[in-house]
Length: 401
Ligand SMILES: O=NC(=O)[C@@H](O)[C@H](O)[C@H](O)CO
Ligand SMILES: [Co+2]
Image (cartoon, rainbow, N blue to C red; front, side, top):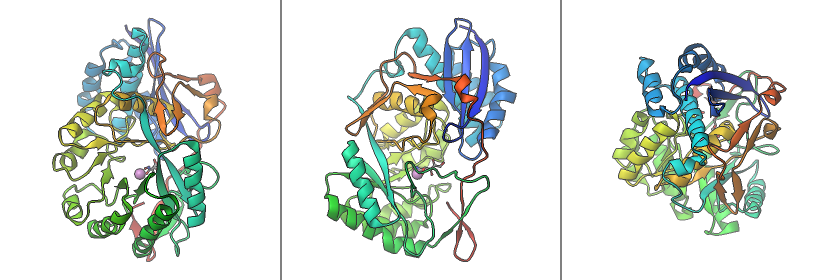
């Protein structure tokens, strides 16, 4: 089954997406998501200029060989751009293979390990009243797990507060600059949880994303302060380039820890998993080398009792959400899938078979991924430069965003 064409389409139906389209001599088409928020064109070029020409003539069914060929053949290994490009190729080839087999991808991955994929939604608010309203809205939609993010009193902006609709962090043609003060946040976060537990009790799972902003000691303090409110997880509590930082953090709190959305390979995850320093690994199929590599990460995590909690923000296209759901349905150690939702007219470009109901999602039964990509429609939504914010402490020092 030779690949006859591989091309990259950058479009912006609601937000920028990079989609790889791979075609075979049998007339089958597979798609992959190569979106890297704020650095989209780097991955588009990596694919267009260095990968797509090498795919033509290869057998689309040799998924593992293609993965090794692109990973080891690049010489310059790992990194977000390289691994997003490899991920897009990998998912497109799994899509083609599923279509050739006439089976939805999850059946090729060992079949369903559960009836549906548990997901969490994003609730946010400029005030605790607004946050409570948004939590109620998510409960009314059927979510049983909700992430809480609220404006921090004393700070002009903070992470994760949606205006109307879905939160989109890449919101300006140049990075907007946010101001941050950890002490204000540390005083506020427990009060946020206390209010939502008071309003909604303990039946709903409550998650929270610290978004890399605390020191390990501060994160330990936050984790301990949140314990009475039983968070489902505290996400990205401290930057994870140095996994040993989590040893101290782990000793301060029993609040479950989730890390990994900015990771792009199993080696980024290895120490956190093998030392049981986290409870959930959050790598995304479109950033961490695709289904082939994510399966390895999930298997390593399973050995150590760590569950997956895949990243599923709106800047991962419907193609990668579909791929994630197929993998989520099959792996034995799924924790929960992030489902932030997508903004704008994305359904004019991406049609998908996945569904949401009562807090669970299912990838559907269409062969392959179950996502169709309309290239003609995509042309109506040209790329727009959009950057993620830069965060500074009140004294002007650049801080983690
Ligand atoms: O847990 N989800 C997140 O942290 C996301 O909202 C990330 O900020 C965006 O995907 C960055 O592009
Ligand atoms: Co996050």
